Image (cartoon, rainbow, N blue to C red):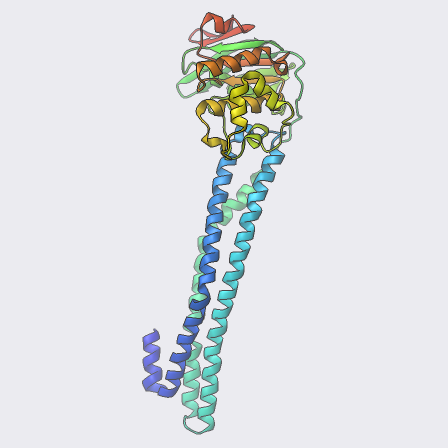
Length: 397
């Protein structure tokens, strides 16, 4: 179209006017290109920050099991911080983009104004006719441009209709049920005829009493349903029938996030320092936790606390499990569920941490369940009871 309009203006209207339009158009193209580098840099910075935001939000969401009434505030603060940084980069990019678009629009207007001035001068000198002037202004106005703009915007609106419907449907259907927070266990946790089924896997007719203040080893072959038992207590899985009672009431009637601490063998470790990981960004108190670590194994935990690496994700598997153990201690919940918490530790570390679980004052009177594959007599004898999970059902010994 540019070539067609150029030929028409040059040979069909007036070569002088055509030359002015071409030269000013080149000027209009070059100016935004000259200042476009700052926009490119701003966009690059914004994209990098967006990548950081996606990484951060993924990290936080992967640790969803750590989110509870005690930690949600600090986790939201952590998210708010990186979100504000991203918003600031987006704002800076938006300012640069607006400036470039404004300059582009201004230079386009300049072409039309300068062309009008040239037409006026030539007409005043009687070097062109009224018809030539009108034709020139008609071509310069380029009615194709606004049509293209309308079509572009219309296509964009049409493409967003389904997205808009989904977003509106989600915002209208989303609701939050606020349950009463349970912070203290007054009696036992009781399974009454609980059944869980998922495809070919099933745990049927579970009748089990977990006595308050006792420590249990949970044993059974892989895939028997030990972890599922914990997830039923936490509400991560829903039982098909039966009821799990907490102080005589259905456990689903309570928010148990402060009452029960659940730690698995792959507990999420944030891309953050040791203190932030233990306290979940200061959701839990750090007071006395360093002494807990030193009581377990002074050299090991002193080394962990003194590591230069900011990110605990660089720790070994055993060190990560040690950090997860300290996080559990910092939460100070009355009921503790540990799903193979020592699986990545070497024998010496496992022995030290496990010994503290039974002797540390922080765990006195706590109700503790530990999934373990260590069925040696000297290991199981430390527990008050053993919960067997297998083909013969679930029972306490």
